[in-house]
Image 1 (cartoon, rainbow, N blue to C red):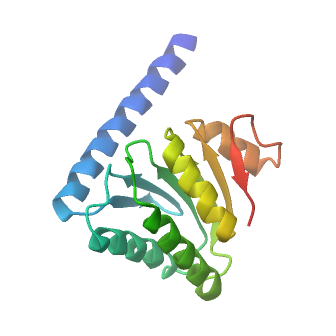
Image 2 (cartoon, rainbow, N blue to C red; image 1 turned 45 degrees about the vertical axis):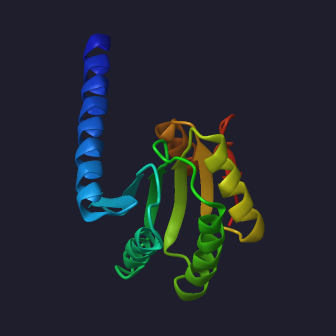
Length: 168
């Protein structure tokens, strides 16, 4: 029985990695910095590429994000920033303005965001961004334990060690 769980878990990870590779390939064809996987809406997974090559790519990212609100349904965002490189600080400030606009135009549709981070630079940018502008919904920054965090949030438990929480 234990072996079966391990095999099923590994198979799920393998399928997730295949899906991620397919999504990244599609996003590179479209010349986007990030791809929004809405196949499991209201849970939306956002996969980000290494670099933002132009303001247009970042604008497309913001447009895709704002389009989620046009569904007029609550949703959760899972950001995977593990492939993100050295993004310019200017995009953190542009995100701050975007968050302010979202809070004004689309209050309370985003339930929460989970951001998977393995880069000190990305963590720093997030800290700067949320220092100047509170998030639209609670944000949980972690290093790869989505299931634990999601369980913790849904059961109103304490935030696990190693997770940074930015409150709404």
